[in-house]
Image 1 (cartoon, rainbow, N blue to C red):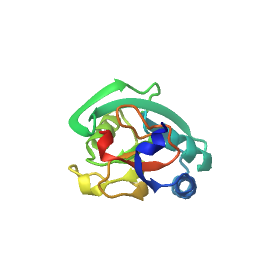
Image 2: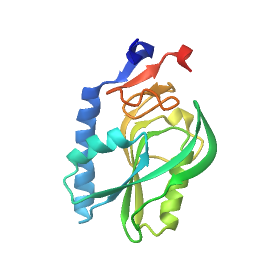
Image 3: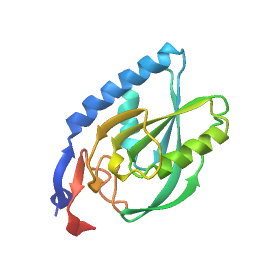
Amino acid sequence: MSIRENIDKVLVTEEQIRARSKELGEQITNDYAKENKAPLLVALLRGSVPFLAELIKHIDLDIQYDFMDVTSYEGTRSTGDIKILKDLDTSIVGKDILLVEDIVDTGRTVQAVKGMLANKGAASVKIVTLLDKPSKRVCDVNADYVGFEIDDYFVVGFGLDYDQRYRALPFVGVLKADQY
């Protein structure tokens, strides 16, 4: 049985992701180039990796990237308890950070990580996310760059998972309710 059979509907196609990543890359390039800066992209593992890989193709700056692994989820619910599983390998003192996320829903994770990065001495911290789900927001945090705003669906694919499954789908889809 194909895992695609567990998808209720495709919300964002592979082509839409590619096109929007190109637009975001151009916008990020223009914004940082105006200030003669090149951000350090900090990708949150594991979900943001496909988005990071697509996005960096379209940023025409001398960027670097690093990874953090943080979690606040168990199954389909955010616990609100942010745990750092892997910290950065790079010093960020005085650097302009662009935090790369797969989805911003409650905002707890990006708010906590943004605060940690500021405390570590980052000159600035901006957020780019593939998906934004403002209807679930419990923290006053907004992404600076948004790929797609979505309604309150449980989504998987293009890095997003349910219990570590479905990440490799090339699109973002709504998981059938009987699967979780």
